[in-house]
Structures are given as C-alpha cells and as structure tokens.
Image (cartoon, rainbow, N blue to C red; front, side, top):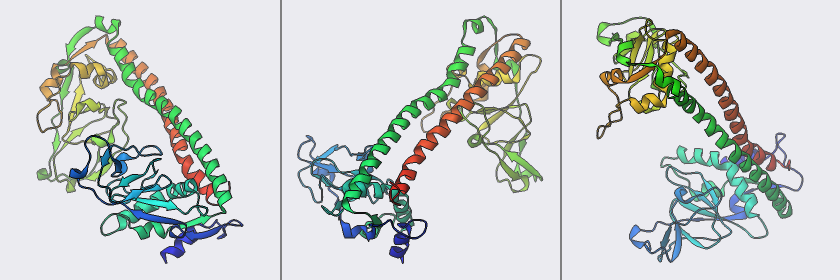
Length: 403
C-alpha cells in the first residue's frame, strides 16, 4: 500500500508521468548502505587515517566536513554517494558525500546511484524533496529513525539519464541563485532587526539626553500588587498575556490567551490599560509592554503604573526597552538560575527625563519611527520566506517534468 501511495505521489496532477518517464523504487536504481558505530576509543586523535562522519553535525550546506578520523572503519561512503541521516534529532537531512572515501556512523546511510541508470545530483534533489516525508516516517516509528526499507521504497519519477542530467544541471543553477538571494536577504533582515536597539541607544544616550534631569525609576513607577489567586475563587473570563506573547525590543504584543479565571491553577498578577508590563525573568530580552487592555500576566512579570505628573508612559516604556536601561540595570546572575532583576533593582535605575511635553513628543517620534522600521522588517521577512519557499517549488516542478 505504501509503495502504491508513493507511486501515485510521483505522478502529475492528472495521474500521469511525462512521456519517457517511469516510476521506480529508489532501491531499483540505487543501493543503500547503512553506517556502523565506531567507539570513541577507535578515533585517531592526530587527525590522520580515514575520515569518519557521525551524523548531521558534520553536514554543511551541500557537503559534510570531516572532523573525526579512525583507523578502524566499519562502513564506507564513496565519493559518488548521497548521505542521509536516519537516527537521532537530526533525522531526515541529506548531503552529498565528500570527494574522498570516508567511514560513516550508524546515524547515516549512504545512497549509491547505479552508474548509467541514475544521476547522483538528480537523486540528491529527489531526496531533498522527500525530506519532510522522511522526517514524518522517522517520528512515526515506534523507535524514531529510518530503516533501509524507508529509503529503498521511495517512489522516484525517473526520466532517461540524459534528462536526469539536464534537470539536475538546471536545478543546480536555480538552487545556486536561491542561495545567492538568501545570502543577500539574510544580512538585510538582521540589520533591520538591529535598528530598534541602535535607534533607542541614540535617543537615550544622546548629548541632549545627558542634559536632562535624572530621576530614579522608583520615583515615577508604582508597582501594582493586585493578584488573582485560585484560593479566592475568581470567576469570569480574562485576557492572559505572558512573556511568550511579547516581542523583544519592539514592545509589540504578538499573542494572548483567553482564560476562565475559575480554572486558574496559579496566581496571576493583574494589569490595566496603560500599565507597563515588564518581564523581569531574562530581562535582557527586553520584553516590556505598554498594555492596551486590561488582563492578567505571568508571575515572571512586574506590573507598573506611571506617575503621569512626572513621566510619559510611552517615553518610560521605550527607555526600559533600550540598551541604555540594560547597561544601568543591576541584573542578577545566580548559579543555577536564569538571570532576573528584583523590584528594588528596577527602582534604582536612573532615567534622564526632559519636560513632560518633550517626553510626549519623543515617545510619539519613537513610536512612528519604529513602526516604519517594523514595516520594513516584515517586508524583509516576507521576502526571505518567499526565497525559502522557492527550493520546494522548484523541486516539485522538476519532478513533475516541467523543467
């Protein structure tokens, strides 16, 4: 039944293979060679002898890197093979074999195309297309992993060898173009992600900011101590916003959960619209949110109201997200615990405050500027997502005979 389904998957949308193509099991056109484990005591510490690949940790973008050697190899991978990870957390990954004969461990199998029947790069591209299915098979097993039969039973839509080579060459060129596009897009996205912190540093560490009067956060923040506790038998529904629902640096809420307070199993601090909800666990993540609604948060967050006669909430919120705040904050690092900051330590941090009117203007300016940055970041994320989706689309076209 599995083979029948695989063969059906290999056909086009009308259930036909292109003229001249045939559907075969991978085992008919390739041999599959399992790896075997070598004890660490059999490694050669002088980096000489036979190269030994143990699993996905050795894999690169296309070819693996040999970082271990042995004089007692048990299973081999040849230069024309394709390596597939079949066990462990990295199951279902593929790489072309190195250009020299190497030993392989039990996490790997070597797929060896039959000369003159199956082109190595064509089969490699086919396996790349099958990686999600292979990972699903591995996780669906009683003991997670892939057996030789899982690879041998894959249904391959196979054109004549000359067409395999032509398609593989086209795919190689197209995949290289995708990698170039990805290599260009990723640094731009990383630069966009770094802009908010850089801009906030410029605002709160500028020469003008140094002239503003200094106050302790404890002089302008009031810690809310309202807590909803299960023992008080609360009723009704509430919106829960935890650390996982807040984006670092930007202060943007990216989620929430509606909860029935009667079913709460632990205490939850209460916040109100306009409060600053501050993640004190791993505070370097800068999860600081100005609440736009009433609700509940986790015990890993402090809730503050701002004295409106002294400070503007948006201004204070942006300061607490800035690198300047993190530099001044005495974040505690206790052995065996995650970094955290206590309420009295938050209160001790100094903030430079201009007039209330200037605070309001600066808060609005930062909001507008970072909203534009956020839109640019989202555009770049969408661009990168489209680039990352291209390989799968190209492979589908290739193996339906459209190249």
